[in-house]
Image (cartoon, rainbow, N blue to C red; front, side):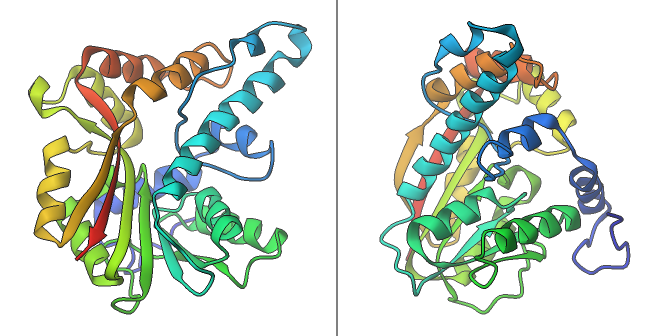
Length: 284
């Protein structure tokens, strides 16, 4: 799908470059995993790997590996969902940077809430809305071509908001200001993200490779907490998932689904320059 270059959603050349990337993205590691059960995640996985998937008949090896990678990515989503607080069907929740919509559909299945997803990729928005329609939840799960920094939704409209590996595409000060506006007092914000470790120093070479690959700008760990504090988001739980995600990358690196970015992720996690965190915060 061609991006509408006159659209006010894409207000900078950088946003247009990111939108172009995700509009054209057709990586099998995203599409084939989603075909396992119709839930299309756009993030990474956590948990111990069942290495037996590499054994057995060669003709079914790729199918086994694909299912295992999808299981690990689904485990990551399940963990995020468990941190969203006590949600009721009447609540409205927001998936900021919703990709092909997997997390939003999971949230609706789990909580029954009305879910809005926003993305600057028109092709992803169209794909996600089609998935919701196919599942018969299009009236409760809607995806919008909007900027997560300026969503246009009413203030205080949401009980919970999450970013699942999407914060590295925006300035955190602007993002958390918008989230604080959108969340009700006492509402919950959760993000899962890769961040560079301040204790290591400046971003490592491996992190620079990741930034170049995804056209993003990975933030420091300290920036998350500084900008949350400045925008009335008080952390209630912080979970270091670094060790839990390494097995996922080790498996992915051994498959035909590898994209070439696996080794920089492994190098950065192993040398301590990169961390994979879940941060849950309450809006006060």
